[in-house]
Image (cartoon, rainbow, N blue to C red):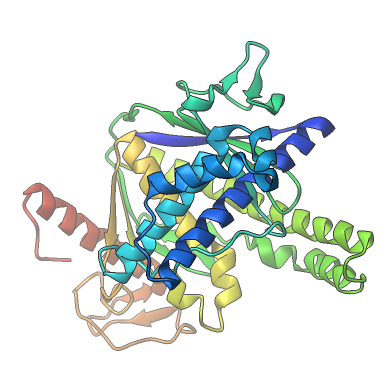
Length: 382
């Protein structure tokens, strides 16, 4: 299986100039290819293939207007064309209903003002990690890297990213073997929420950290400072970076917390079951800020990835399953209950905590689907 390992880069001023040049050349190659594709479509000419776009790029390097494209690695430009081709394939497959998920629109032009800039080097570029621990990139130099751990294998590609806060990162793609953990008897179903991030069927709860809510005062102050600066001024550029760094700190803290929580749950349980929430739909309600702050999608994705790597079972229960309304004791499905109702009593006389009851039902439903898929015996009782 393939994994990404991301590390912070600290390029020198000269290397930052070289990286900015590479970002710009990749952007121009992408935009020129997109212009050619659009022109062919508007003139009803034959579709320009990937190979023809590569030939057009080679011819453009020989012209005085685009001669400066030769100052960066050719692999960077070819990977920009590969990104465009991939974007077009996704768009066509989405338009013809061959691609699952949300609809994908046609590719758009890249802007020099985009908050995120990136370039990619493959093995053809002959990048390497030197004996001194630096990342050697063609026509850029040996860039210092802040290593937090060793790479498990030789990377097949590396993507250099500059984010909105002006930070540089190297994202390596490496091939790793699964690392099954020792088998344990525990299993858990998780009910995700806002006031409490998650409640497990074993009774454990995870308190919602609310990183965005706790940082709102500082973010509001930085946003006001940005809005008061003149457009195009140097002070406005500095204020924009300060705001971006504040947002990046919130995102980094949330990501680190989700990594730790998902790793603990996967380590302690042989099987993990969650509800297949429609996060995109919930993010369009009046609870949008709280839903985004919770980071449910990131949490579920990390659970699934870690389960696949460490040999654990992960399952999603249908979002229409009445986990909240169903009594985990007798199986009777009651009426809908508003969010303010945190405890309720079933007709059988058992009083339930709303979240704990839902977690128990999610565990039972997920376990039934898992055993049914494995050919095991499934009990009809909840």
